[in-house]
Image (cartoon, rainbow, N blue to C red; front, side, top):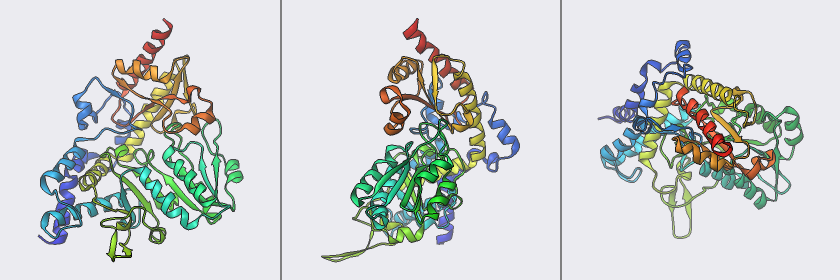
Length: 444
């Protein structure tokens, strides 16, 4: 079999199940979108074995990790059953196939986020590692004493702590953008915080607490005018909306596979080619070198320079299947359904006088995420009682303690219901009924 034929076969087998899952919806029509918004119907749960096997489970924690469709589980198992070998290390057929599977997946990721070159896709363990690469390998090449790094108060700790450390190491200052009462970063706030000293602006695309989509294009334009760089944390945006890193104007973009219906332990970092090439490696060891002597070493080209050690080839293979599945459903369909779910959920919550929604009252400002509290009841108690009714939500600080402190949230904790397109009206109704049970448990 020729190399091109072999690649085509690998691409077919890696994503065959996913591509067939919703072939009729490969290109979403207006009719598809209308049907998707009918949240009383649910053609999607059957694609997800855990949900199909637990029909009474109401899973509302997809912002923490999404469920996996059968196509992804099948792909990961298929790798181990049909091509398990250490990629990059062997010249025999299985190793070559494993290596090619990784490169096919890299190409699929690049296309999915609008990256111009698949070689600028670095495959990591998670979004946290991707952001740490930028903060620890890129930042030292540009940050000097007196410079500023600008982030928002709504950042996940993964996009906050690395910048604390980068600023401390460089003698730079960490500056925060604060939103208005609806979670919006205003032009006035941008004017006040983004200036000649701003060397790096690192911002979450969609907040994992407020659900708000930040104006990354405008933020990027402003920081570029000052000669700085834009880093985007796309962990919460990539599963819900179209992403085009070039249209955004990002210099770096990071996300995790497990929130995108893919496997645990897989992340992606995209960076502009000239920046990645100028950066030193983050981790050193096997496969990230070109040559080694007793006293020195030279690095492999990007992306291998940032991919030290044995790659999770099966996870990479399954990530390609996850992207194929999302594409087969259609991001327009996903967005329309999730918007309908959030609108219904916010509307029903508004009928409960003991529930306070955190963030904007406008449901269209919440991209799959609704954070809230129940008056006088600790979020941990709310989650525990809901769990008795098989309703799974998140409770805690959501790795966003500075945001909850700034918002003045009691106990630095809140509840969070995060919806995905595989949810339906029955799931929301179960949550609302469960919240009523929570209130009655404490108040009679």
